[in-house]
Amino acid sequence: MKYSKTYLLVIALSLGGIVAGLDSGSKQQRQVTMYGTSWCGYCAKARQYFISNDISFVEYDIEKNAQAKKKYDSLGGKGTPLIVVDEKNMTGFSELKFTELYEY
Image 1 (cartoon, rainbow, N blue to C red):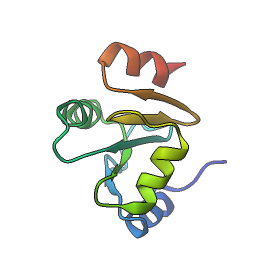
Image 2: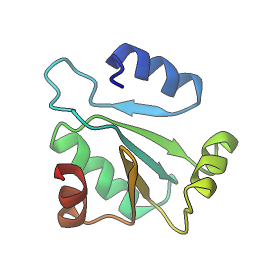
Image 3: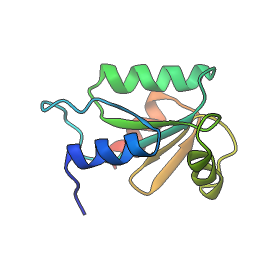
């Protein structure tokens, strides 16, 4: 099921998330969600990679958002960032691992 960018923005903001890369020229075709913390270095690295590569994503701070923490726990989160691409996830961040997850 595809959702409009406006719909995703409204949902993410209503749940306390941060949305980036929702410009009309975005090459976003997959749903990317990142569960992280404000102090996490790998979260910052992932965030910068997404922005630099025009990848739309929704970010939730699991220390500031109880609903996001519950979702993170239900996904088996054991570290940050927990990045979910459609229905697949990865813990931590490396450009190679993310690219493999995102492109396949």
